[in-house]
Length: 410
Image 1 (cartoon, rainbow, N blue to C red):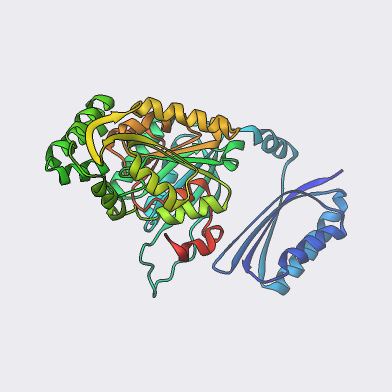
Image 2: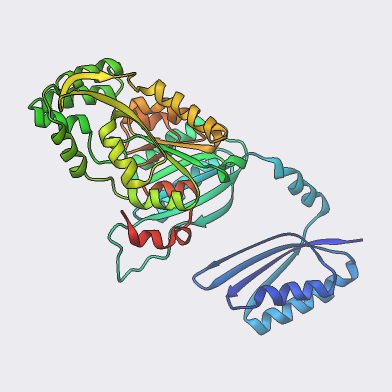
């Protein structure tokens, strides 16, 4: 009759430890039922759930493992596992799983403790914690520091809405972003990311900047803010704003496009995602002249925005073609996904305004970036503490996978 044992090995890490201890188990024809390992600051924690085919071998294995542990300066803890407990563990593998990502300039014990308490209160178990950001020097601080850890949790929450609300409270009170989404097969197979443009890819609302040139900046800014908060119909507000731009010269549009600053982390995010095989798109309620400039500069694959009517090099104050509002953004996301032969669950949508909510809500991963309060409340994932490259961590990309791109930010 076989025995099941849980072996925990902890202490100072060194090369070859896994080979030594699994070698001992191999001598007794042990089957490995589960294995996991973590190394933090050169200290190892190795866990092995093992099936020993012959009960008589237990004491011999225990003796050999302790002897090797003593020689290696490691602590060895071996505990028997009751068959019924093992079977209970096996049947629990079908539980729902979710990924909770913490993202900020730094992460404190208080923040992790607060998140962990909410997880526990909702009947979930933390199965794994992974650091996504690289090691942080205390003597040579980074210019734009980032810290991110990913928690893999299992179980069915008592209340998803309550968890999101409490996570949002922590975010607002401590300045850390907390994202919460289902862990499924699509999470590792997403291949399309679409972005809003104004206040997402760039640090401005283009139409507001144009309005300043036209001498109607305050009026257009007021209308824009109302539209982004969802207080006005987007199409109506857009026509009102464009009408106020009548008389601007094409040369002024081109100058604005070159001058407006990119959002922090845009170049790194775009370069990394493209290198990893993602298709990138701009779905904007803004203007095509700016979208075309960004499409070329950042290497995007798709770009949809609104087109100003221009006659003899002068803006007429009218819009050409259909106005792209929130519903149109969602429709375009569906069309691009179909063209790329992707399920919507394989898509990611990022935006800041009310007109981004339709595409954020249907994407496999919807992200509110530096978003208005109403948008943050309705989106499961948000980034506001760091730049747009924070999206890479929400996707689950580790710093080491970003690699040289970090040194060549656009």
